[in-house]
Structure formats: structure tokens, C-alpha cells
Length: 154
Figure 1 (cartoon, helix red, strand yellow):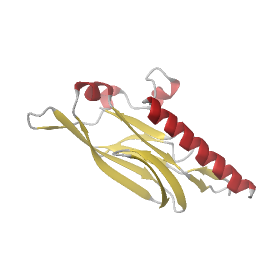
Figure 2: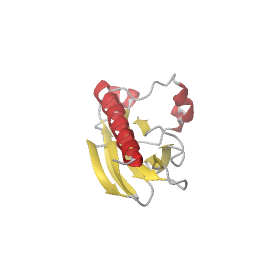
Figure 3: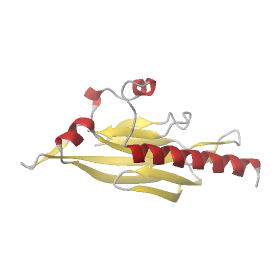
Figure 4: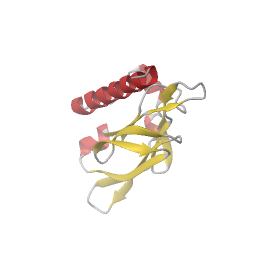
């Protein structure tokens, strides 16, 4: 196994473990963490679409991973899934918040992009973006950050 293949395997395994731990514990990010400063303020929440008198709130959420290679993508949207995809990749779903707790705390959506070759020939995280109701709410700084893209939809 080449050094690049070994590095890619470690990155994908680490990302999968981090995503699995976050999903199993129900933890996203704590708003008091330093990473919370990179996220839009609560007032920047996209406008929700209320449905009739049911009290449901719906948001259209899109996950994207950019690039031009084939890579693995781990995501939590309407399901938790890992796919081998050709980039660019996009997945859109409508998230329905039905309980007061979901509306207050939010539902975590996330995408862990796989690795792609950078201009230097080394493997780097692919760029990822999350949009809610057409508004960009999270990204990994065009792949410069090693963090996954995640956002609590409220």
C-alpha cells in the first residue's frame, strides 16, 4: 500500500469514526466551543416554512461536496449514509421539525467530504457546503479546514 493510499485510509477512517461518534451521542457542536464562532449567529437562521396549523416547520437542506474526483462522502441528512461518489456531488432533502424540542435545539445535518488531490499533489479534504432554504450556513473554507461541514437546522 502506497503512502498516499495509507494516508487516505487513515483520513477516511478517522472521519468515519468522528461522524459515527457525533451521530451516536447526538452531539454536534457546543455553542460555547471556539468553532461556534465560525458559525452564523442564531439570528442568521434561514426563514422556516410553517405548514398550515400543524406546527410543523420545513427547511430545504442541501449538502454539497465539490471537486472533480471520485471520493467517499459520509452524510447525515434524511439518513446516515456513506457513498462512493463522483464529484461534484449534491444531496437535497426537506427537513421537517415537528416538536418544540426540535425547533429549539435543532436537528444536526452534516457532511464529511472524502479526500481529493490538491494542487501540491497531496490529499486534502474536498470542499463542502451546506445550504438551508437557499442560504449558505456552513462550509470548510474551500477544503482548507480539516473540519466536516455541520449545521443545526432550527
